[in-house]
Image (cartoon, rainbow, N blue to C red; front, side):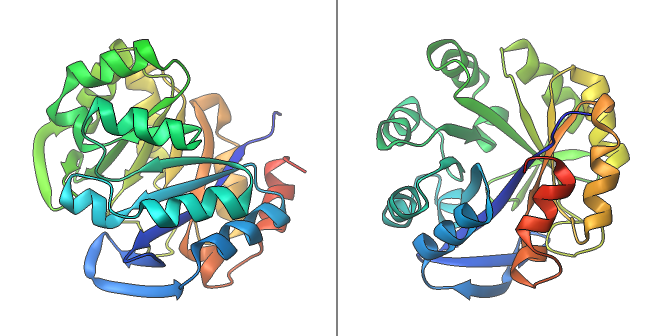
Length: 245
């Protein structure tokens, strides 16, 4: 069995590391006022890539936490992927020029299919699409709006546009510590054939074991957020199970 990728998450709001419940901005917990130090901690534990979301950017439709993103790059010293409010080609170029390894397109994948196609063509291996689903339908604008596209239809569309990895979040599980929606994640892979990163709800080492056991269903890794901040388990222990160290 190959190693499964683990992506510790840093969600940024007002320059601080926070977690939300089900994407609800009124249910926010601040875990650190120093994103750079958090990135360093993850790197020292053995992480290879950090998943960074600009929550303010997701609402505003433009990057709002660039200074924090720079601090994460500088102090973590490892690869990072960044999402949240990235809607234009120029934003993608700007983040990549800072040293971001991969850019995550979320709402843009719903609203601007041509951008996804162009970005995949011009920046191979640098573009990831985030599909955040509520009741089976893709949500947009910081999860504030529902689209009329099913998650599976969107996955097929971005796969046809050359996307090489999709991050799938079941919004009902995010920040709730009640386990990943493995079946929906596997079904998304069946629909599009693109490797899927599971996101939302990982709460125990057993969740990671269950996800790893389904790698033949196209689940290439998972994002871990609240469980790490709440101390449910250590990143180093999670990495051992994933086979990264």
